[in-house]
Image (cartoon, rainbow, N blue to C red; front, top):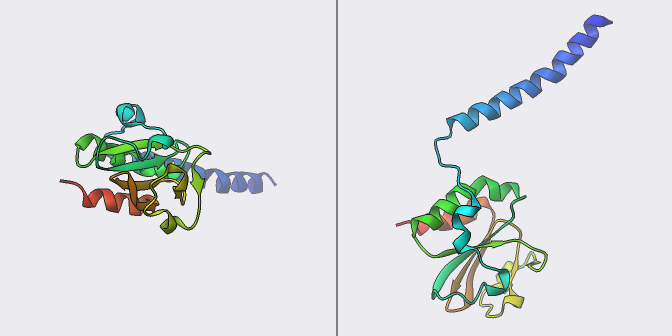
Length: 150
């Protein structure tokens, strides 16, 4: 009976230790800077101001601090903003932002009330106070940002 309990305990504890060690090793191998949203606090805007920035063309990145996908790309997005590649503003997700599956219908929106997102992370591109692009997800957001790097 005692051997069964020890064997069972070993089967439960071993995978947990392996998972923790793997994550720790993975984090230690990372050489990138760990950015924080406070580093771009000057670039934070409210959702209501998303179409009224002084720049003629810019991105608006909508994120949530509790979103795992947003956390996965946080460093790359902040690095892009700090690099001055293309104006990028940060919008913290709130319940005032509508969510829809039909983000294509938002293209051309000139009123913030006509903008909706698929979820977070989302990257919007604004040109002359009009929405011209609306993409969501880690991969799509990073693909767009990488295409604008100088």
